[in-house]
Length: 286
Image (tube, rainbow, N blue to C red; front, side, top):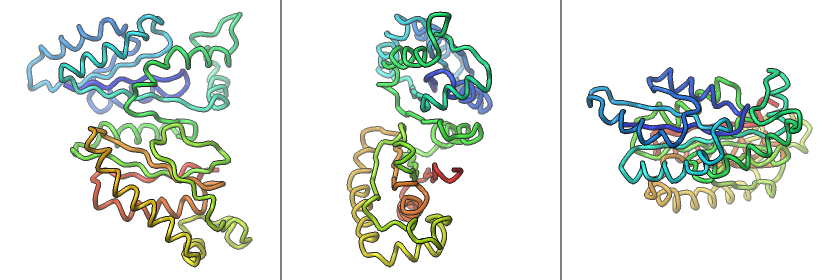
């Protein structure tokens, strides 16, 4: 049996993630009280083996505080009984969440005449902190389209059947914030910046001119070699700890030149070692 729990703050994309699970054959229940989860798992375990039961469960601020507070204990108990259980926590930057509520004109479940939206979002973060702390994967949906979110969940959790660890290399710009879903972060802002070359400013780290510029500086190769050596040394340890996915974020100032180049190079180096390897350039749509 397979159990995937989707949680996160309102407006972060939980409904879309649950819909994706339904589309790929999961039986999904939204807002089920955590106290009923063991009974649900027992029922699923009693089904014929050929059913290959897969459950998706949404837990969010609509659940009672006491119910959410006991969620980690219930989940760990299920795992101790050899239930394959993944917890995915979705979140986004608060200005993005406020914008989404404004566009959809939805009411936040914790807001009322005395609690405005920002206060409700802060309360929600505190309320869900026990689940966020134990999540197997945190996804920052701030710059993800609906399609990108669905593909990310599908490829990193449901769509891959390899026993190996899934890897995501993503570039980002520090000026827009460090990704909340990053497991490892490397800072390239010490490298020569193509942005200050007028002919390269509007290009990206995928363009031959930018690649040539960066390779002309020895420190670029040294940085790549150091990061590669670190990852080759430690990724096997991550994998041995039963980790199923790791997000490696490479940052520069704007996220368009140095970090993009490095992500592309690292992906070429490590793709033969991992069956599931993805690339994402967070700032490419800016």
